[in-house]
Picture (cartoon, rainbow, N blue to C red):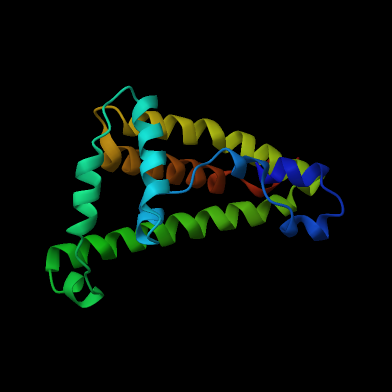
Amino acid sequence: MKQGYAYFAWPFRTLHLKPSPLLNFIPESPRWLIARGRVEEANQILHKFATHNKSKYPEEEVNVALDEEEKFTIKQVLTSKTIYLRMLNLALGWWSVNFVFTGLTMNVTNISGDLYLNMFILYLVEQPGNLLCMKLIDTRLGRRLTNCLSISIAGIALLCVAAVPKGKMKYM
């Protein structure tokens, strides 16, 4: 959304000083609030989530869970081989996805036309995929299969683009 906002926000050199208009509508993370000791605000947000989802909000369980919270060090996490391999797999996956996405985003500058308009179009193109993934995660597919499918489809699409001969893309 910031890309569309940047198109109309001049001068662009001060864009980083302007907050995103969507920040007013996104609540703070209850987990972050609890970690900072702001339990009452976290309870209000969790209550709001529960009413939106038409479910009962168990305040007692949240307060009890806060009292029983344990602190773990990275050494304790890395001693388990299973957790270590999962963490390594996730780190490699996140790194790969961010590396490719950053490369695609930076390559938008090579497309002819206005940079901000191109970034906004990139944003509009990626939103259906984001919404589809959010919906698929809540179905029987779950997080793991949805993640694997989306990364595989993106990889196949990028390989197809790489297979196109250089002179065939006239708009680039």
